[in-house]
Image (cartoon, rainbow, N blue to C red; front, side, top):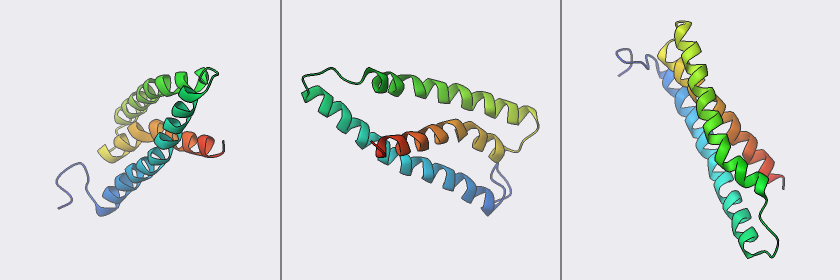
Length: 106
């Protein structure tokens, strides 16, 4: 099962699965909190928090660009495919985790 493709060991597979699972866990916290904020603002007489709406739109592009640069740098240094993948998802994973913490504290 392992050894032929980019994921050579069970430890590599677990590292990738753990990273994606953590990101999915935090996204499951962020999405409902943001939807709740948007719904409350839509029913409110005062305008929505423009900063949060702008953040929702721009952070995805910033994380994707940072991930692409990190993955490219890792690949150019000769990193194995698992390290390249971990570098690629790192910025998005950190952004989602930070959003979950920030929004849960509100």
